[in-house]
Image (cartoon, helix red, strand yellow):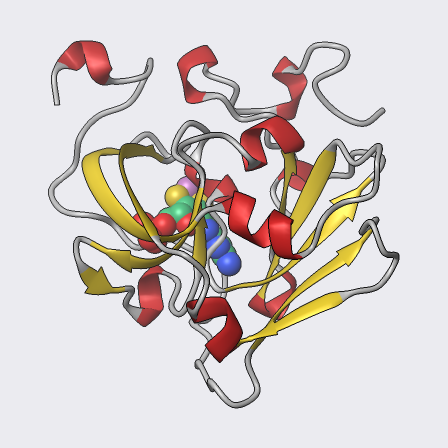
Length: 198
Ligand SMILES: Nc1nc2c(c(=O)[nH]1)N[C@H]1C(S)=C(S)[C@@H](COP(=O)(O)O)O[C@H]1N2
Ligand SMILES: [Mo]
């Protein structure tokens, strides 16, 4: 990675660090589901089982990954399901502008609809042409490479469609609501009006 590709304040470590809050959850395909709830078009919740989810069209993305603790990992290759495929199966109500991504054990991160549906964003099931390992988020993690890593929720279990923005786990604990590494949006005190909920 050339220096010019690094957002301000970042460095490239050796390998890919594993970083998360709490424990690594087990994956039980029989009981695993992936819910879409909140402001859906039909008003009903949609639940994918593992077979249905893993049958959705797959696509590949390559991107650098930036953690707010200042490491950046170049050129990670991810394979998985584009948010557009999930949205097509479970469309939002008019007026949905934000989502909350929910993981095992209650971890969450909020995203603007535009970041959620950005070209680079992916629900990844593979990294580097291998199935995701448990510690990197198996069976499904979100990858939002253009935002700081805490938005790339591992062990995803649900998407909540939001009419009004709401802060997720780290966003409630002093981290920036938007989290653009190129603008060094690390902390909530840096937010401008309109960056987050009041
Ligand atoms: N469920 C969950 N997802 C999470 C986290 C977490 O604590 N719980 N940590 C985030 C943070 S801060 C980063 S930098 C990345 C790290 O991903 P990695 O462990 O695959 O490198 O996962 C993100 N996703
Ligand atoms: Mo992070």
